[in-house]
Image (cartoon, rainbow, N blue to C red):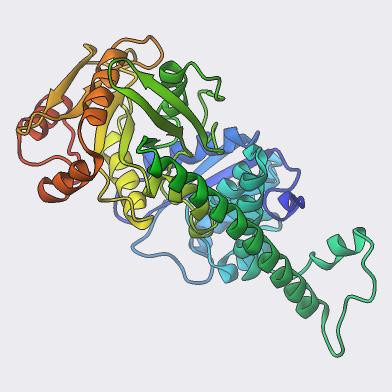
Amino acid sequence: MTDFTEFITGKNNTAILVGLNLGDSDKESLEELRQLAMSDQLVVVAIVEGRRSRPDPATYVGGGKIDEIYQLLNQTNASLVIFNHDLSPIQQRNLTERLQCQVIDRASLILDIFAQRAKSREGRLQVELAQLEYLASRLVRGWTHLERQKGGIGLRGPGETQLETDRRLLAKRVKYLREKLKELQRQRRVQRKSRQRTKVMSISIVGYTNAGKSTLFNSLTRAQAYAADQLFATLDTTTRRLFIPNNGHLVISDTVGFIRGLPHTLVAAFRATLEETAQADMLLHIVDAASPSRNEQIAEVNKLLKEIGAETIPQILVLNKIDLAESSRTANYVRDEYGRITCIRLSAKTGEGLEFIRLALAEAIAQNSVDLRENFLEVGRVNDSSATAFLEREEGLNYHGIK
């Protein structure tokens, strides 16, 4: 994969974070941005917060806040400013000129983390495509020299400016990446059809980043998928066959975590990978039970599942990390009025409650997957039954993320 990191975060390792409150609290989102920065090996030296009724169309924040950030840059010698919001190309350019340093937004930071973490060929192709599509509207320099490093000469067409040449080369690379990803997507579909012919049930583990998906996957399958207490530790999908005694085999996949503000170019580029989730027979929706933002995280995951066409797939809510939760540390599970397990409380790290996951999977295998999906469409993910009442009473949790 071509290294486009310099266009996003460069080689700087000290940063100032900026968050703008537009009417609702931004504290948790800013803390998440800080964790993202740390995941990208950045040192956060200051956090600037502001409040406005609406963003400034030219610079997102007002002139006074720009002066405050500029002073902090001089005091801390930071060389990077990260906004906890999507910046338009004009806003980013104006801020860079006013602050005289590199300015990026949340989407840029996430793209950079993905670029560092992607290991498989498919993952690297997807990240590069997302980066290039993000950069397309912001390109003002810097693509032609990369081509020349590869030995290209005579790149500029008749009457072309350098910027036009850069855009043409970028479009050419984007087209190439899309074609390669389509090939990989076709291969995935062939593999999926093979599984469907053998009637092997498919399970996808989904959830917010750092909710413990890979830890649960490893505990169930005894695999060695990379798991760490950091955002986006896992980018590449890992799939294993899992044997459930007295019920047979199923296929279970560990997938990339979701997060608020996930760049649309990244969602689009990872379409081939996310399609595996959209075609699953059941989802295990992992939630960090110890997180104060779990309601918002559930809502964000469900929103992204809808975006990729996976909103109708039956899912079991798995409240993980009960060993870290302040209350409700007992592993258990809840059935709805139809007798189906809809919520499980466990700790993937300690193993407490894993037997309830195996029980739920055994029952799912025993039930026809087609009937499972049809019943789900009729009654919804969690209806007004004992499961919903339990979640609201015991967890203070609204499954659909509506307070």
